[in-house]
Length: 576
Image (cartoon, rainbow, N blue to C red; front, side, top):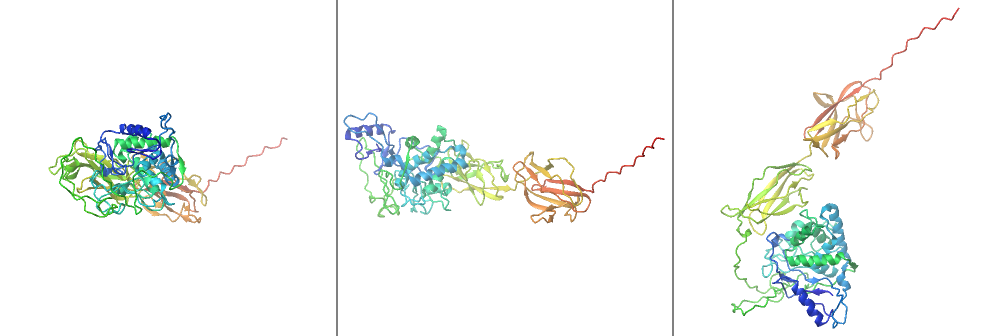
């Protein structure tokens, strides 16, 4: 039986069984759970944790579909007269959507194998967020046939998130909405978006892009999703509700027991989440709970028109009532006036290395008092391939009791030069704080030959042994370090020699300077074979690396020694 909280699918069971199931479902929810007129959960019995503010979650803690997995009743009530079986549309996943989940799992298995992301988790979230892209209504490239939009996050029963994208993704220039099959809010998509189908775009309405983005989002904190505690944290970071976690876990368990592929467009539509065909969805009105006693009449307000009243929300554009002033006490975030550098040292690292220093920022009130439990977002900007130790370019950290938030360690890529890390307060419009980080090229401070055999050759011949050196930096292997090798005139004259030993280029012509060399992963560098012209003598080969390490190697070219001639021996006289 495919069930939905507060509503049962028609024809599944008779009234008696339906009443029992509804009671069981209601009992499974915490007090205070309600659904809106479209069947979406609008409040939960679990208060959102301050660890995941709405603006810092994937969905903005938007409403979600509450359909439950099909139930197989082993002992149906006698009056029911039927055995409940899963509908094919509920048990199956549309082909393109399923392919997107599996491709995302494969990509994360390669880039973040420690995360252990199962595609069934993406399927569970996709089911709860959009009913598998509204039953797989996607084109051949995986883009939804019409936009899937959540309600306005205008504070009326939901989070209050003002527009962050000028309506580029959600068509709403006043408030944000969750967008696409995995329901990302624009501010999260801005840094979490991925190109999952290789078309060069990051589109939240494309199931391949959205599934890959969701996978990276769930794996962004070095969580191991094979462990239940980390799995719980990852799901709650997507939508911070204990009921959401429980529902996703039920679908995850269901899909782990087996599912099958169905044609695109044939999946079961999520209950109540309508689409007007133009890509906008009506903004639901929260269903109020029945009060225990009559409420005093309130001053009349101008009612909003059906379907919402804000531009782009699917309504007719009528006036919207002004919500009453909030009496909720200010949160810690509300008290933040500015960010201060909390003693970050100079940020410099060699390409490929981890920065020794970490960025730290302190949240303060206008009087300079530290503010604890405020989420600070650190974002790497600029033309760089540097990332945090989590593998992402964005990290959000709670301030501690002293108001300080310390970002994860920075890891330099191969791009050298400067880039910026910006610290901002999540959910608060205060000036950001910029930190400059510098990546220098890989370097070595020591070079040494790996062998001690003398390097000799006869005129016109070739050296029997190649020159091999090992590079180190502060005693550690120095890999991928740029190097040059030059046959020089003298120890105090680094100019290229015009005679003596030489290398050969691709055409077999003599060359006495090699550039573009790099040490291997083990720090070793083996030079090409050396040859000698007809000049005899002692010659010098100088090898130099980035960072200033140099090594001068002696080469000798000499004629082969001729063994001394044997003196004739006297013959014995014949006997008389």
